[in-house]
Length: 198
Image (cartoon, rainbow, N blue to C red; front, top):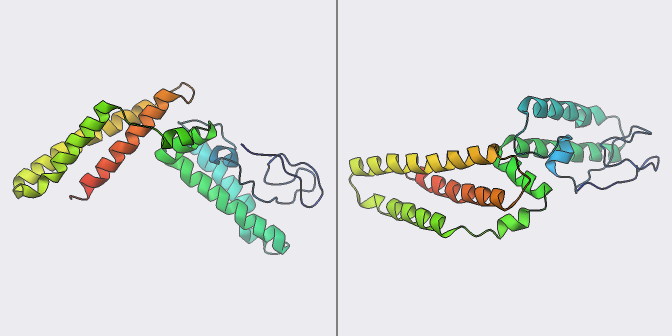
């Protein structure tokens, strides 16, 4: 959650903005902001990418270090910090995984995701898929490719279905959302393992 800070130049409370509304000087980064707050968009799993990109370019233009060449060294430092924070926020919110984790973080659920335990059915399915991957090396080239194609299709289908369910999820951040995101993370690791067998 962003906090109120006082302008370093005029002392006015700047309410976690990039520029002071009184003296218009650039402010130090508020590192307590989540990516949604940095870009000034409402926390959501789905975002309007055109709006997100337009907001990013506008903020980037205003804080770009090139425009602070004649400013004080303090303002140049703040410009670099703000620009880096804006770039990082845009990068995170542009990716599905980054956006979902930022959304959970905005609801103080990051710790709950880290502590999440997969349900037994998911563990069994992942175990079966991992065993099939382990057995690939003992197969003929043709058998290996056939198994890889089938496994990739099965894993991708579950992964895409879960991503779609999360993207369409309209409830508040809750246990059901945590379960889906945890499932995505498990399946994503399995997909990476399958890609190593290309």
